[in-house]
Image 1 (cartoon, chains in turn blue, green):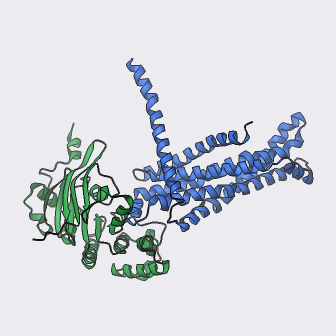
Image 2: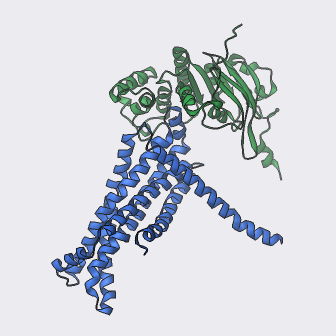
Image 3: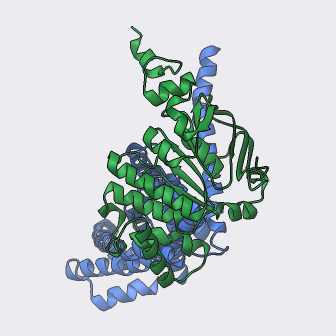
Length: 261
Length: 263
């Protein structure tokens, strides 16, 4: 009986901790979002977050997208050749990139690059009393540090995904027309023939949600940092891991919402 | 004898972390325009006391009155108005790494008084001059400054908005004795010039006697002695005597030593 109780406690404890953390994250998110609609607004911090997330992430997202498009074209060509369905390569590439790979891969790359940096910056501010200093200078840390980053994330990821979509399709186009023998005009025609507005819009909506999640987890883990350098390191890791998992989980949920029959 | 209410009145302040009671019923008054230094060992709760007063930590029990108002019972807007009159010098400076020195100093001015950035920059230059820093420093970032310069910039930031209350957390920690004396002198000058009420926490006896009009000793979560700062070394209180003279033997037991002595 005692061992059964211990086993149940072993299961229950992490579940309760998960619920508690989920509740804290939800309250943190609501608090951060509420500051987006209440003045004063820190425009400079918002622009800084936007540039950091969108502009400086452009190279890594662009490279990821173009190579993904190239690999996708190659893989789908060799796979579809077994069924003599090579003609579907263009539409598979464009639908995969716009619906899934563009937002998910851009999200994961930005989570690794920006989410980690956010957690490290805010975490360092926490352990060096800079967040307390903000409060003593009549500045709400949630309004100054968190709200601009949340908005930056919501807007930056869709911008990056537009670029990722274009470059992903371009990568597939380059491989298909140079290595796989596709006619460029026919490839482009196939690309756009089966592309619908919902394919692009769903990807952009996903991107906005992923951007919010990346900023949220970066800010939350940084804000809750305890201890010194070790705490900052742990917060950085937690920000990237939690954002990556949430991106994949919400990808499933959003795909279900957009495309389930 | 003055009957004016104290600027800051603390009654029955309690704060625990986990099972450890760090503050165990603190009663403390600080009169308008005076400086009180709270001394105590590392981990005795000095910083927790200041953070509770500054609303950075929420006490478990007790009251904190500023200008006769219990700030713990005030709505957020009224509380913010009171804390707009406060300046704080943090132990490690807590300067914002991403902002240049002038913007660090002018941060409170920009946040509270809605001055233009040009006006704030000019004002920051004047305040930096008051703490002995030239205009060439204003463009630098905190990481480019020495420890002493960072302390001066942090002091400039604390006094920039001409606060009615100033708080100092270990203002001379990490500085050499001469630089420590310079910072002490600047603190005294600033407090006198602004006519502010000041609370400093330190375990530097020289600094405590220099900065404070009065001193109080925090031990085991309570104020165990209070008197003129000049009498710190001759208080007659065994706890204060042991602490101020740095004796190993006395009523203060260092738990870490006891643990280490166990077989």
